[in-house]
Each structure stands twice: as C-alpha cells, then as structure tokens.
Image (tube, rainbow, N blue to C red; front, side, top):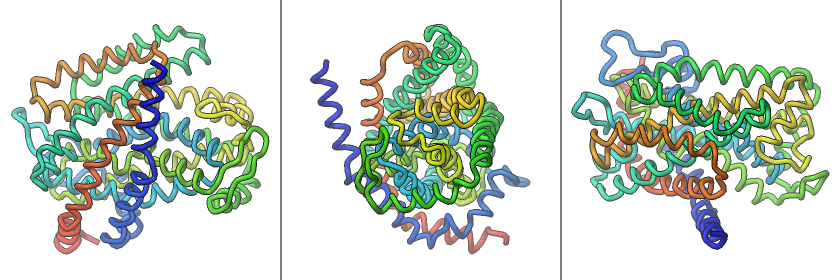
Amino acid sequence: MENFIALLDKIDGIIWGIPLLVLLVGTGLWLTISLRGIQFTTLLHSLYLALVKRKEEGDEGDGDISHFQALMTALSATVGTGNIAGVATAIALGGPGAMFWMWVTGLVGMATKYAEAVLAVKYREKDENGNMCGGPMYYITNGLGWKWMGVLFALFASIAAFGIGNMVQSNSVADAVHATFNIPVGVTGVILMIFVGLVVIGGIKSIGKVTSVLVPIMIVFYIAGSLIILIMNAGAIPAALTLIIKQAFSPTAATGGFAGAGIMLAVRMGVARGVFSNESGLGSAPIAAAAAQTKHSVTQALVSMTQTFIDTIIVCSMTGLVLVITGTWSSGKNGAELTTFAFQGALPGGGLIVTIGLILFAYSTILGWCYYGEKSIEYLFGEKAIMPYRVVFVIFVGIGATLKLNLVWTLADIFNGLMAFPNLIALLALTPIIISETKDYFDNHYKK
C-alpha cells in the first residue's frame, strides 16, 4: 500500500506540475486579453447583478434556479476547506509571497470563470424532465463535437466529487468537531449524512434554496471574525501587505518553524492552492451556471465570475492577512491547525470561529459537489442514474467521516487536475464563440 500511495503521489506531482499551472494561469491571461479585461471593467455591474438584482425581470428565460441561487450553489462548492486549510498550507510552505500569487490566480481566474459560464449556458440542454444540463461535457460535445473528451471530463468529475466534494469535506468536519467538542467522528458522520440527504434528494432547486440562505451567512460570519482581528491589528496591515508583495518576488528566509522558500515554491503554492480554492479552470462551477434562469449567456457569466472574486480576493485574503499580521505563518504549523492557532491567539473564541466556519464551509461544499457529480453521471448514464448516485453519495459522506484520508486526498487531487485539461482545451478552442457572445450582449442587450 505504501508503494501504491508513493506512486499516486508521483502521478499527482506530475499532473499538478508546472505545465498545468502554466496552462491554468495562461488560459486566464489569454481570456483576460481576448475579453479586454472584462473582469475589471464590469466588476461593479457584475456584483450588482449577483447580489442586488439577483434575477432577471419579466420573462426570466430558461433555467431551474435564479442567478443568485446559481452563484450561491457554485460558491457553496468552492468556499470550503481551501479557504481555511488551503491558504494556510500555501503560506506555511511558500511563505507570505504565496498570497500574492493566489491573488493573481484569482484575478485572471475571473476571466476563466466568465468564459466557462458563457459556454455552459450557450450549449446547455434540457433533459426529459425539463431540467437544465450543462457544463464542460456539453460544451465540449456540442461546441467542439468531441464526444469522447466530454465523456472523459464527466468521468473525472463524477469520481472527483466523491473525493474533494465529499469524503475530504466530511472528514475535515468530523476531525474539527471531535477536536473542539469531543464528539465521536461516527456520530458526526451520521448527522452529516442526514443533513446532506435531506437537501440533495430534492435536486438543484432544493440545493439552490438552501445554499442561497446558508452561503451568505457562513461567508459573512467568517469575514466578520477575520475583520475583527484585522481591525484590532490595523497598524500591522501595511507591513503585512509589503511583506506579501516583497516575498512574492524574492526568496523567504527560514525563520521560527518556517524552513524557507524560493520564489518558484511561492508561485507554485499560491497558484495551486488558489485554483484549489476557486476552481477556475477545473470546469466544476459552469455545471451550476447552466441551471440559471437567464435570457443571455453573458448575464449569468458576469454573475459567475464574481464567485472567484468573492472566494479568493475576499475570503482567502481574510485568512492570509490574519496569518501574516499575527506572525503565526512561521510557527511551523500547517493547514487548518495553523489557521485555528492564528485565530485563537488573536481573538478570544477565535478558534471556535474557524471550527464553525470549517463545518459550514465543508457542508456547503458537499451540497454543491453532489450536484456536479450527479450531472456528470446523468451525462454518462442518463436520468435513471441520478437517484442511485445521490444515495451512494450520501452514504460516502458517512464513510469519509471515519476514515484516514491520505489516499483519498491524493486521488481527489489527481482527478481534479484531470478535469482541468479537457476543460481548458475547450475554453481555448471556443474562445471565438466566447468573444462573439460577449460582443452580442454588450452591443444589443446591455443597458448602461
């Protein structure tokens, strides 16, 4: 078994090596240039559509859920352990400079997320029950005519859902609850199974309703706790920002429990953990975008790209800044343990904020990824496979809570990376369609 895990680690290192990271950031940069920096020029309008307007007036167009519910479903899947443990891992291994490269990944990733949603809505289909189906497997098949590559993406996504979207999340919750409240992991697993099952059995409309309430609450709760710490240490923020920017372009010396890191390690950790958190380029979020009620693909795409902004530029920044201003990033701790250590030392009850945040983030991620997985399974095997998939998915929530997941973490990472390749190829090949849809919207539908 040790040899098998070592082999998987090597495969994981190859898949998530420099070529994929360059392809992820390069695709985002290419789309940013091709779309003339749309994520910057339309950000305020996009946030208005997402958080204020929420849905289109009059005839809402085809779709199962509102713009806001589609955004919250996608956010539910991305705002998860990556925002707490992933950021801490990036900074603990790559130094404060890794935070800068997470920001870069997030900013160019907004263009990627926009492009994914444009294609998801344009090439979506209705199933026999009138529900929307979309995502990379559909725009690869319908846009490029490459059915085989659509099948590969759906296969990778349906497997990845059991790892990063299921067992990894339930295990994180079970461990956090046991450490904080001394509740047995098996009990937590059963409770999670019940709460997940009650929601996902109802499909995307049920998931959309729950996430539209849960996600804003959990994000505001975590940001509020972080802001209190930042306000209490406001004088240290300029120095922290200076350190982040400086060490993004220069090696970080060993200090305390930190072993030191070169520039490439800072870049690699920042980009890898940034993508892990916001999922831009992986192709998961457009599956939710395809369910939105909208008349034009670009309307939902503008809403969808705010997901990456909220996830990385706002939520991840809260964690990163707390770690840097408190100085705990060099303590030698890692992951969620490091974030908990930072919050505990900076604020009475701060550790509880991290624990509750982790529980809510992980639970919402399970809901979002169940939908991604079931739509991938539906593409492969038809509608009859959806309900059995949901039942099996719920069972694995309980199993994941009780296992040691080194193997599952590695497998999840591998299949997440494998999802990215067909999706990024499709985005690059279909860039002319993305540009055409964008031009049509701003020429004929956009009201200033």
